[in-house]
Length: 446
Image (cartoon, rainbow, N blue to C red):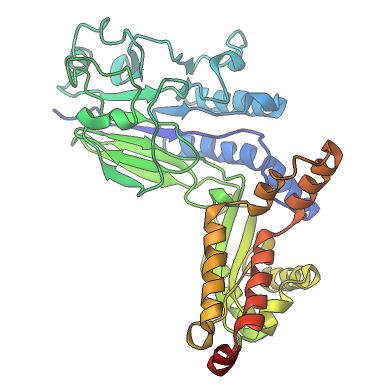
């Protein structure tokens, strides 16, 4: 049976007015962009809703961070919801870990097009268009959900629709539902039968009657990374975050435009709406590379990426691996600053956005694999093993300073946060190359 054709936008982790982290010193103009980036991104989401003439907007968790107590976030939501109401676009909100239902202040005058769903809701909600059910929403994980539903969902949908079409069934998983651990470290897509979906569904949503309620689309809210899981039937999807707030969130960000055609197919399209783009660009620097060549590589890396009209700032981290005099010169903060300013000026006409650049250097001796002594190889293996043992070795060292008083412990903690651990590893590798790379004759007679 074909679906009722619909179109909606699924967004999650908007985190309105929450501030980026790990930025460092930036220009005044860039600082303003960073402070406003989530609010500008939400404006772009509203524009996308109007442009694509969607039936409804689905917000699944962490729309704002309650602990921020942001008035600007609330004003942005009211304004955006009212714009959608003027075009008869509905908004469905399910709370997340950081925006519980109580934080939404349901006694306020939210526009009439906004519907809040509680994790404790047991009923299935019909989404109507011209008095016809075009989709249904239900919160999965309610202990008594299936006991109170006498008809299978597919049968129920058929009762409310005309033209022999079936409404799309959408399942929502509340962030505070008791879920089993999920490993999202693998591929972005995998095939998971609905009957075997206990790895990511609430522990109590299944009953003895398997698949009593068929769900076509499960809306997830798990972290900031984008994920899609194919099921049989249907799929589960998490759009990730619409706006990254640090370099760890530099991968695909945006919202998902879901189009349901009459041929029983769901089309998921990523809409990029972020005002600030976080870029991690990797470059290999050979010892003989000149300044002119490096600058050209950096230009090409940036110009190969097109800026969108809604983007105001690119936060760029250059991850440079290499060795040699030019590589060593990049360790100077003064040299990095001058290099960044010169590059930004040369790209100003061709890249009409603000640029902020940071450098992450990783020492690599291209000749070590051929000429290094056995001592060097053993030393490098020990360095790599030490790095794998802990993500933050310096912070781990602080755990062994319990004999110090609180003042000294705090001072050491403050200093540790200011130290670039990779720079220490780089120095260790260079020193090892210098001290241990002896000839075979020296090694024999030592």
